[in-house]
Amino acid sequence: MMRKLMIAALVLLPLGAQAQQAWGNEGGCNRVAGRDEGTDMVTILWPDRIEHLESGCRFIMINGDINVRATIETECDGEGETWTQTYGMTPIGADTIAIWPADAPDYVQNLRLCE
Image 1 (tube, rainbow, N blue to C red):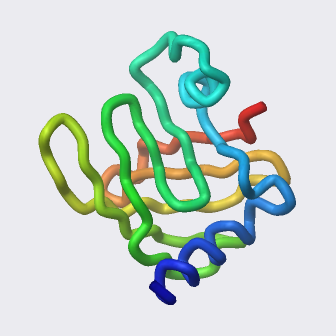
Image 2 (cartoon, rainbow, N blue to C red; image 1 turned 60 degrees about the vertical axis):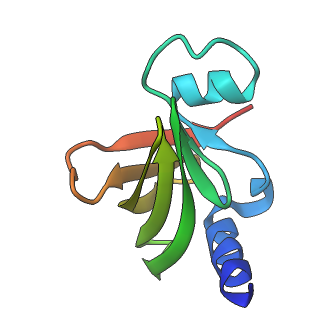
């Protein structure tokens, strides 16, 4: 329990005062707003998990400095499967967070605060 609280607290730090909001790509922010995603490319970063079109990954552990660059260990499920996934994450300026699967570092998605 304490470990989960520490992880949640660490994730909230780089998101600043808007920590309870979601960060997403265009499809992700459309979903958060209750609109049709309009694409299969859906990524939403919540304070405790990462959501995709048909899967979700909850945070297990964060390594590194999330204000500079960190890796996030997750447990994922979707489409009847479960797996572990490691993501890299770094803030880019004040309004963008870059996130990518560690096993596919060229697949970077820039997420912005969803309105």
